[in-house]
Image 1 (tube, helix red, strand yellow):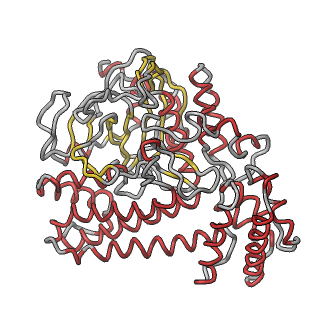
Image 2 (image 1 turned 180 degrees about the vertical axis):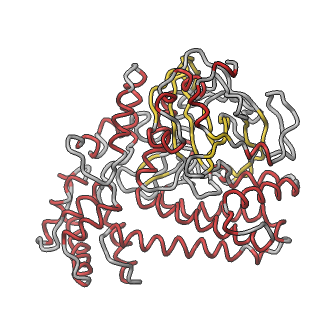
Image 3 (image 1 turned 180 degrees about the horizontal axis):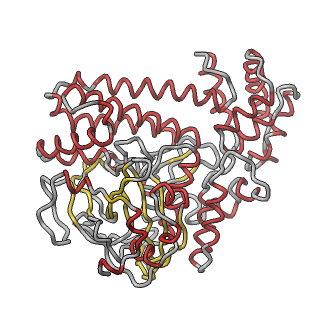
Amino acid sequence: MSAPEWIDDWYSLCFDNRFTRELPADPESSNTTRQVHNACYSRVHPKPVASPKLIAYSAEVAEQLGIPPALLESQQFAEVFSGNAVHPSMDPFAMCYGGHQFGNWAGQLGDGRAINLTEVTAADGRHYTLQLKGAGPTPYSRFADGLAVLRSSVREFLCSEAMHHLGVPTTRALSLVLTGDSVTRDMFYDGNAKQEPGAVVCRVAPSFVRLGSFQIFASRDEFETLRKLVDFTIRNDFPHLGPPSPEVYAEWFAEVCQRTAELMVHWMRVGFVHGVMNTDNLSILGLTIDYGPYGWLEDYDPNWTPNTTDAQGRRYRYSYQPQIAQWNLVQFAGAILPLVDNDVDQLQPGLRHYVATFDEGWHSMMAAKLGLGKFRGEDDKKLFSDLLDVLQLAETDMTLFYRRLADVSCDDAVDSVCDQLSDAYYQPDEINDQVRQATNEWFDRYRERIRSESISDDRRRQRMNRVNPLYVLRNYLAQLAIDRSEQGDHSGISELLDVLRNPYQEQPGKQAFAEKRPEWARHRAGCSMLSCSS
């Protein structure tokens, strides 16, 4: 597509490709799998597709980027955001990075099926990278094809936006485009590969740099390239820290630790389980990044992981996520240690700050989930831990439990609490005397705690419903939208996204989106655990 053919609305975008302008590039131009040294990225163009069709988009993200409706609704938009055409002002590239995967150093990884299409400056002055996931192979694809299928792309698109509306720091999603091509995938890695519809998601973030971006250079003693990337990141994403220096590097590390701790608190608040918390999947900005085999807790099970690859070790289970994030930050500290003259004491405060930030955030978050005014120390810690024990006595839906608890009056008889919470139980007829007694005893202490602050039922309900969502992207809801989309009906994606835009407010006629997982979905593929190809 030559320059004169581009519609005028593309010029509403302010292109600013600073990553490729300011950082060292791979000198090799061929798109072949290889080890890339002393370079932060490789220039690469997306793979052309057969028949791109836009099937979903985020109006909020488009508006934020300054993309006008005429452009959004044009076929040219679908061509560009499927990778079929590249605007002359774009400079596509794939990032080089490494990482620890399941606790083991994996060496070079990089953007294997993601291509950073361009960088833009939005009307609000903020800088964003627009990244296509599933747009073809890159030098970092190893033995893969760099493509994505519809089911994984729907999940990525919906979850990016759902997390944003939940108030969880995250990358965003601009668009979801069908490519018109078929992609071969073995969903369960059991030798039964099949053809699936291909798709491309456009992901949006201020930066897609992750902890592993720095590890790769440290692992190879490429310290000059490491310093260039660190300085670039501080100048552009942490400018409030001032010009880069050893002292600023330590302050920067502490802020990364803080943002990561705050992110973990959010994940725990809404019951989100990432599934693949490798160091290359943790954002330097404290954003949720790389949506693969994620999931929300249905019944409260702190040992649950959504990832089939993690089923045995459960390294990335729900309750372990804060510890894994801390472990990842220790690895990150090791990568940047040369920049502070290998003085471990310079980075220890950042790691302590992580622990303090998470602990304080956890206690404040749990107090908010229960409608308390503020955290009061050891007694509240006991109240919180005992509640989590109670939630495990019976199969209890975490999301619905907190919403139903908000409706239980502190003036009601204690012995009726389980009956009022029955919607949250997966087997309400099987609630035995032990569960009733433990729940009643806990609620009696909780009620006294509420009364000690003179909090009215209305006030408590308002507080709780502000932080406890009613609508989350349950795996089975995503799978239902995928099923319809694979049959050519894409309206389920938009309908689900509309509900997820207001996750804390009851929406008339949308009760079906706030129900616990149905029995048919307990073990169905896509509705419970997922593989990394999901």
